[in-house]
Image 1 (spheres, rainbow, N blue to C red):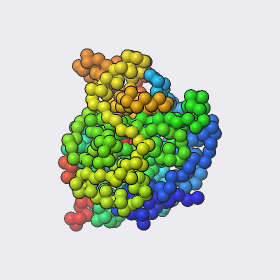
Image 2 (cartoon, protein in one colour):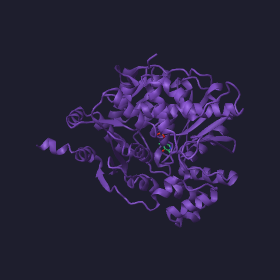
Image 3 (cartoon, helix red, strand yellow):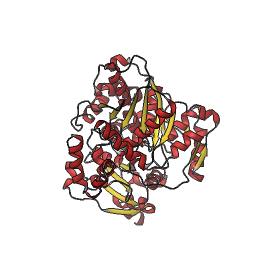
Image 4 (cartoon, rainbow, N blue to C red):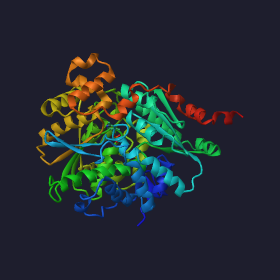
Length: 501
Ligand SMILES: *Cc1c(COP(=O)(O)O)cnc(C)c1O
């Protein structure tokens, strides 16, 4: 049965899966959502016998119904290959009574690789299916990890260009080095004088600009998105929750039907939304625990039902979660509004105008699957240090936010349900914060020396992604103001001359 997608802001704007992937964002500014969440149709005991790629196929085929079996399997094969440093793709590591689901074994050592290694293949397949002739321009705003993962995925992919905007002073030194050394004739990386929300708002404004779209078309371009607003990012993220659950089931760590809690360090709400979709598809997940850093707009939302972005933007040690406008929350709001696009559109209108909205008591009741928590920078550092001292296992600051929130949650609620923590980045990506959390003496060491020291302490090899950038040449040096983003894009694409002529 074909699954149709529609905009969260207008029930009349419909798309097939491949059209939704190609467009990225609906033309009314809404996000594409499936009209219903399909149910898993292979028993979990069967999935437990399959490898990552097979599980990926069984999950993704339910959502991407207009892709043929051959197309989808080909995308999956090209994505989950030797770019990952383990055949398990997403291994589980038990430490201190919980399971860490390590989602950072791909090319750029953050969980974004889980979806961005397949998105270019889904997108180029979607373009072919829809006879889209234009060159696809991927416009991306990044809080640090999406940018590099998208660059790696799209570099030198024929028929595509990729333009990444990142907050110039808002990413880790390693994150920045990873991006500005990116090769590929079709890549551009630009630092903006602003924060992630500025970058994301600027990108969304370009997507919503019909006049710009028209001029793009005349020049043979069309925009698409590699951000988690693209449903093609979200669907591959559902896979690893199903995979993790069925690994534990297969190993006898979970009984049939036993619930599993999930803790997710959250920024744009994409990763945790994928867990929610997995639960709606029938995976026996218990609480979905949304962990925030000091930018705790989501924690406050779950506590009060009020979403209020009017607050100071705080730069933390978990920069990929430094976000005040969590785009994917819109998909949840739509759902708890009873799949009511008009109601959702009204709330999003309030967010755009005044930066704040409040959901109704009935909607709040539908949030019972979720729990919210947050961790300060000190609590995050403490979580890294104490886990290391107890077990020798070293986690990155984003994962540590989740670990800290989880231990708080377990203490407060006494909930003893088995739990996985989504481990979203390798500690090698954030060596400075990680190593100084373990011991202040590392503060004086240089970034790459810290990577070697981390390797010594953890007994893990320095990942290829770090070795690659050690001596790499900086290839991207462009910086612009947040109001200059569109102008920059037009110049890069050669549109500006056209207006003047
Ligand atoms: C992107 C990112 C997050 C936040 O994920 P969302 O899907 O945006 O909520 C958390 N941790 C790391 C390391 C990330 O790169």
